[in-house]
Length: 89
Image (cartoon, rainbow, N blue to C red):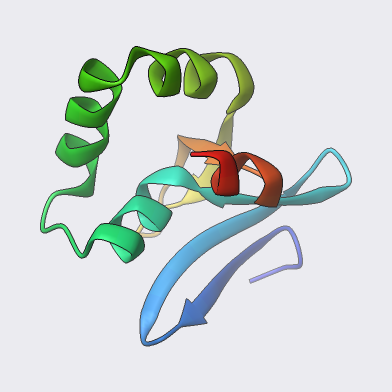
């Protein structure tokens, strides 16, 4: 992998990241999966956004879709956030 797409391994969990706009952006889904230990972090985030409209608006406004490599090796647009945005979520 190039500097532009890397995995960060933290406590045996992988969090995708990509260099975007001169800073690292991390997969929001991967971070939610890590923090909640959810079996379906996509569904967890969807329910969280419905329950807490403020978080839903924040994510929708501040977290861009950036291209990242999936587990299958394909490039897909993924909801991402920089360190500050992830900490706010």
